[in-house]
Length: 489
Image 1: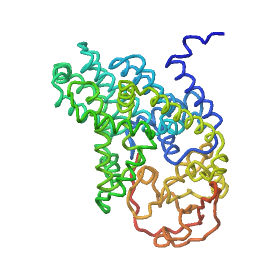
Image 2 (image 1 turned 180 degrees about the horizontal axis):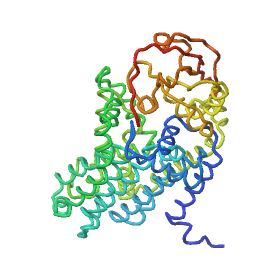
Image 3 (image 1 turned 135 degrees about the vertical axis):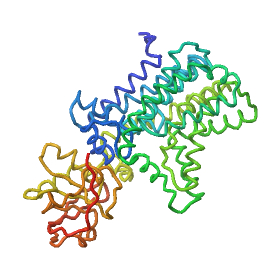
Image 4 (image 1 turned 180 degrees about the vertical axis):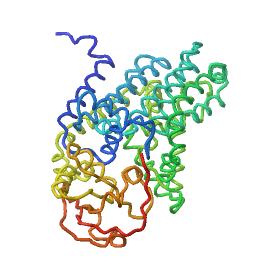
């Protein structure tokens, strides 16, 4: 029986990958991670801004949980769908710049990147950011390389940039890369620097304006948190952290593709054609990597902070290999990544497989939270509130005990505001006169200087693979200061 023609298309295999990942989500082992639980809580309180992130992640979770309920799989459902949408824009961009073969390879390569395979099972701010980044890339090249003259492309470019900014502030790298491209390429300048570009700027600004207004009304909390994450107050200039960050990119993008990207960079810089789409793709790929590498050298950077580099890098690496007659290398990379993607599906469905190979610690942040929250809730009767000094446990408690009428609050250890719950669910002495205090520490250090009556009443603990997560429980009352910093929603 002949194989149907559609079985060889990008669309068919993209659908297969998404279907497998959604099925794996439904069957997945493990609990929501702390950030995921916090994002779910945000989704219960729709707004145009939150303490540490723009609002898109909450809107996305709000949409999927409104349709399918509050189960873990529904909270995470948008992740594989958003990455599939990114793959579609990558496919369309590669098809426009090169040909259908490059488009199919690029789209499928994106879907199987190691970083995407892992990210498809976690709901993070990277998923919507990358969708809108890839969309902006597509419309930018529609304008700069495709010679599009319609105002629609300029408007849609602005929409993508604005929505990207509402997802994650790393979208700011895009106008930087676009500006460098336009500055270096005469053809890009002629195509982009036209009157409709004002519409791009206007729409991007209008879409992002509500979050700017929210920040202005809330002491620029998100901006301050982002600056704090940069951690420039710590020891500066660390070559080891830069090396770790760059080494992690081999895992995020895949060793073959990252080596190909490096080779393509050297080749293009030695043979520069500023008007060539490969050079312009390189600018969009290298800009986030250079910016985040600088941050890593100055202080620190997480591996995913340069994720915005990889839509353009995927297209560039595949085009470089195909143009050089190295399709077998592209196929080998795709096969390697497909094997990794399948392994991720297996491990997501059953964490015990990770334990068997000694890699259980890789998912420690996704284990034990439901059990811990149940143990704490079982001790909460009779208290005015359950207080926490740990952001992670607050989010997990709000999610896993969502059907219980518990008063939950954050007791800040240092009379400051460092996360969303300290800002918007603060300890209130007049309301929380007798509280169950749940501490990440095993001591009274966070309460012994402000409560008169403190009694240790037990612990809550859960296995997380080959280790345990443990919280100490105290009965506290008789608050005498210092006055807590309080914000209202």
